[in-house]
Image (cartoon, rainbow, N blue to C red; front, top):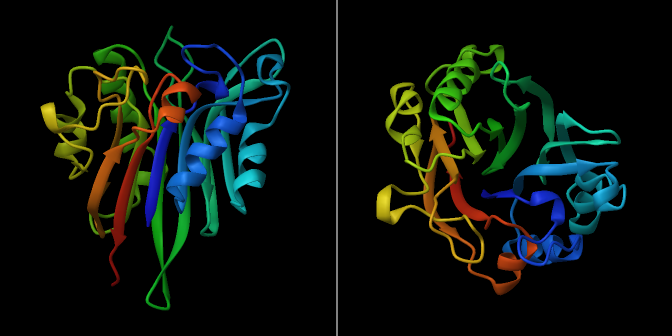
Length: 245
């Protein structure tokens, strides 16, 4: 199962500030993922031509299964997280992980049915966009881990947490997620997949964590010239093996 996580910045280029969703679609088409985990996805916002981007990208790229979690409401429209899949989404739930007095944040939970050797196995995806401060992120991770969707799962359940962590220091892979049994599969320290800013990445802000019956075979951040123009983040590509049993 190939998964791409990407903060798409509403399809507005980080350097030219131009809305060009075709650039997003071209980059995503190149990597041909089974599951897209996207953040900062607009719905009916003037800056992005009023597009419902989860459906715009889903239609352009032929993803039949989609979930959307709006987090920030504007004068017109909203933006949030979107998960698009080639596998059926059995259920979804958008979790409010807004820290008091801070910007609205969300974690979009989806439950997929992934085919493996003629059988289907439930795989849980948590699509996150965390806050800017360490205190805020720790609070958000704790709230996510104790939320109903995750607390009902045992350590053998197939779980992927992916998204924009805003974690410049690399504290998350060493903290609560590790204590809860999650492994960061997008690298540590100098070996982490760097994604921000897209035109000269120095921060590994976009990360993927796994637990249970999921293994990582390969990960990398995009180095396509078009990806560097399409958003202010680079996408991270992770090839996962969903284990049977």
